[in-house]
Length: 428
Image 1 (cartoon, helix red, strand yellow):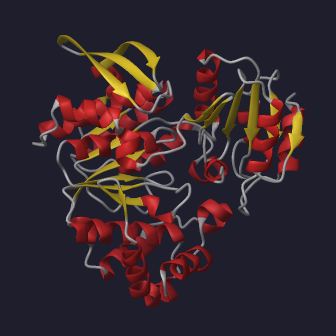
Image 2: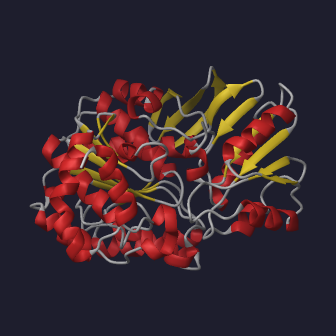
């Protein structure tokens, strides 16, 4: 097979959660353990940081990977889903996995695929671990796909575990309360491995404290170690002044990820650096500042308050659940614009009504859908939105909706595209 044929095989042969949803979810680690055992357990051949959370885990993963790269470490990065190219999921020092390896790996595991019928995600996790082992990375940043306890990535023993936050998402799989969701995310906590909590709420803190206590894992809350004294935007950068516990010197960080919600993620990344330093990693302040200033360029991250046009202002954001959308809309409020145009597409298994109720009724809406089976049809989204008092029309795809929004918008208006990672990935 060539690369195109290989990707087509992976997308069509294997059940893919991002396309079809729950039917692709394998709620145990059996297949991943079997796959990795057949490869000689590559996950034991490199150091790692494991990151879970409802929101922020992708940003934290990329920011931390950029810092580690700037510190001189050969750094693997595994994230999901991808926006444009499958190879975005697996990177070393910001470079995507090469096509030849994807072909070779896939051809080698086809007999085992036929035997155990794994999911798309299980195969990509095993591919990432094998690639990182072959590349002899110094450390890999591994983002969970869904949950934590039963996530395919959860066969690693990391240097550090990070849980960014807990919110309402995938409740049909992870549980119908924040405590149940926290239990699943807390499944990445390992014996005596330090764990950082990015942000906590009363309902979930006791869950993490109990499980960390049982595992004898040192527990750190990032927001108790540092806090943001002030922030501003300048030239598409978010500039933040940070005060550290027991330190009178404040530090100023420039982030090329300008979303206000990155302030929470910044504190999490800084604490991760501190924890890794205590384990012997040499991550000086210059590496931290440079990595944060060049996270997008060093790692290729897209879709986080990504401005693709200025007049009118066109912003892409992969926010798709209650907390994520709430944070994006807070940023909309402090961003200078006249009228707001929202291009919205969602998937069927999200908490649609919870999300729709957050949007302002004064905006103009363009309801659409990603070109995947899991997408909520644009007309259905239109009807659900209308019930929430949101007015607009439906469009067959995101680019048709964007063309219409640009025709309707004045130069000082804002066009926001959000609601689905897959929708953002289809913007031309």
